[in-house]
Image 1 (spheres, rainbow, N blue to C red):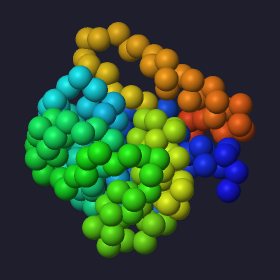
Image 2: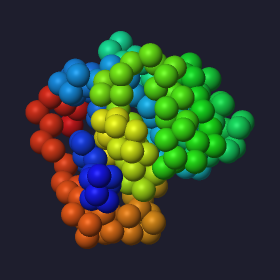
Image 3: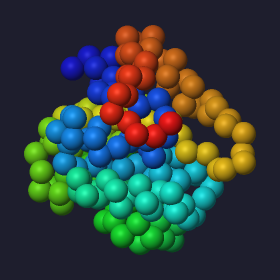
Length: 180
């Protein structure tokens, strides 16, 4: 597999994870999601899951098994978020290593083609998911309400490098999303 394929998400949502609907998962025949935490589910400086995120988890849980897999090693923070969402979790994953993703996939007892790695970063989340043969979904980072959406220089660099290597990061038209 070439670098552009390793960095090419199967789906570019173009919006935060809260816009990923059960209909989208069913369209792609996905029955499990491995979810990044920092900036994918909660802003990096937040230690709590929002009520909107908790409602999203409740809706998605009706169609998919869920695991949190984070590179973060702050156990009180990651454990607190996982407990608030009532989800199993793995921290200190070392993505793009596949080892902890494989562990989460085995915990779901699903074949890799029915599991998606969902995250906001190309060189950790998408790269790790593609290396394991998972469906990969790139989402926009979550930001604190009221805070200006600031662009991460590292994320911008990842996008630039990925596009230079031939990855297409254009969001797909989402005719099956029920959110605006």
